[in-house]
Image (cartoon, rainbow, N blue to C red; front, top):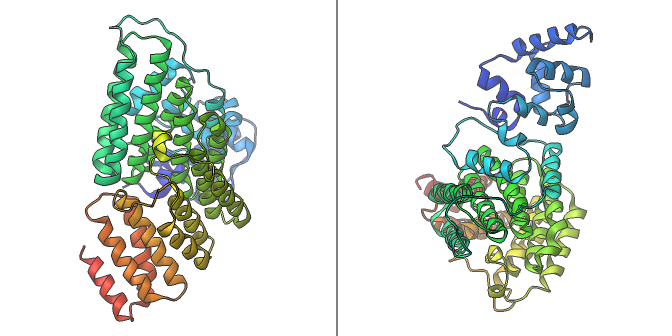
Length: 455
């Protein structure tokens, strides 16, 4: 069984896939360290444990010895940082090291859309994320490439775009599990078209944009299904395809969804880096609504990092940007779900993370009543998201001592979820249950806990 640490850190995973004990590996490193003239090195297993926990990193000479042991050139240590360069020692490192060219993108699409690889791959550090984002920013878009297949026109990317729009909507209502499989199937079909058809530059870029959206959709639904390592693969590939498409919208949207994964799984600083990269491209999208959404995501990331001042700045920027948003039906299709109510929900969730339930409650209540351009938060259309926010509203009530309101809202959250599959929603509700469990002596709380225990 793979532990959380093995999924989150390259060294832990490297040991796991080799079936090697930490002390045995460190002994080999120590021997290499001495062969390279660096002297003796302690090799107790606690040293590896501290590296994996992030207590500290191995010094430069130790990293050189490790790299030599793995057959990795020293320059990789500088290029990718610790522990990012260790990904090069993993059996599935190819996706991480492919060139940022159209050929490299097609290879990445084939790897990501192919058979599910049960091995783990996860970018874990802000250094590695920063390298990926920098490569995305500098990558050249696709140009007209010679092809020999059947000639296709704009009607083909039109069809793909409509099908991907349907996948977004299905994810809202049927849950992530089945949509993940559908998104991967769509990704394989688009990849085959890129490889085998003949087309002009405009069609080629639209196909890459469709591939990016299919991979982003697969990444989000993988994460929402609890497949965090698979999600990372899809997000990396989506960003590569977005670069070849020269499409700032799908690139920024990918970074926004990728950031959710990082601030929700213990890397809020990495999430901030992703959002800042997306915001650098926001002016090219021409959408104040998308810009507002990115600022709201930045608010969430800063809140998870415990930076109240930065979270407040981002919250104000999100509300300011939204003032310039036009009618939702005239906006980008990828932000169909985002309105002023959602903005307040995200800001309220951030306030909750920062330990301010009173402010959180104010934003949650504002979200339920606000109307802008006749846009109200539609909980029926987005049952999974609505259930998550209801759970957070219940937590705010609980934080303010209103147990009755918390229990009533918690019941509503559970009922809203119904049979929709979502690991993220399940985790949110379980977190709420654990907080309520501290008050099991209250009859209403005990009844709710018993009720949800049988669901």
